[in-house]
Image 1 (cartoon, rainbow, N blue to C red):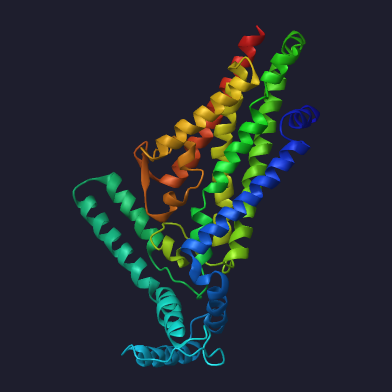
Image 2 (cartoon, one colour; image 1 turned 90 degrees about the horizontal axis):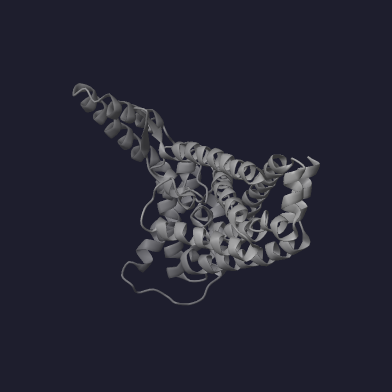
Length: 385
């Protein structure tokens, strides 16, 4: 453990890294705040105050007793503005927004569709399950066992779903689609790990380590240090994204199923939001670890730190460009924010068995990590000999 701690202190566990981290955290919040003001203004700022004032009267378990006054008020507002002749007088004592048309939008455009989605979601999931059952019977009848198994899996996942409560889920759009923090993680990885081996080469320590027979243990310590760093960045930036979503939009319903957010209405997963966040941390960790091990490899084969940084940034840039061309799960940048893998039912054929693409992506990233760990260790052993 001492050698791992020593490698952490040499590479990323230092004051300069902390300063950069604070700066990037501020940039991350500024970017999230700007996104909210542009795309999620329904629950942001002054408009958000009116939204949550009404929302607090109807959130929770959906019951006729709670919804009846809301429905009556929504119908009254609809009748009042239907002929487009209405008062523009500011009346904060009568309306949440201060204006009759603002309340019409608040009731009928903002919140009513959300309540309707929660109440009628079983219709959506039951239709998907019915289509899956139909496909299962068809493929079973023609002898296509793989497709039959795939749709049998889908049927089990989508049947008997329901949303137990109405909760505001606008924060999910910001949190689960926020990829700027992932870019910041890559920058932190390059700045923290690109000099892992080149420092020793430039200082002459590489020969001393090799002659003392410590090459392998030193390499393993650097890999362990990189793993700790990736875990820290995964947890830290996920927490920072969640905090930004809570400050700007308000995080609610963490114990609700993932499909209670409309963006995930077709998801095959039934995790709660809190469980999904933990899964996101794990996926981000493996994706970052793949990148970190590649950076270590670049550092090992580079003659100096400048070349190592250039190679690392070049590698990251190529992978980012490839994300626009292909959604292959081989590319860690395609799974570092795995939202697309969770929005729809998608499988990969592994040895004749359908496996959900998200699970396949995790398995593949673990394999990539193992291969890169071996490559880093092998190169070190060859260099020592």
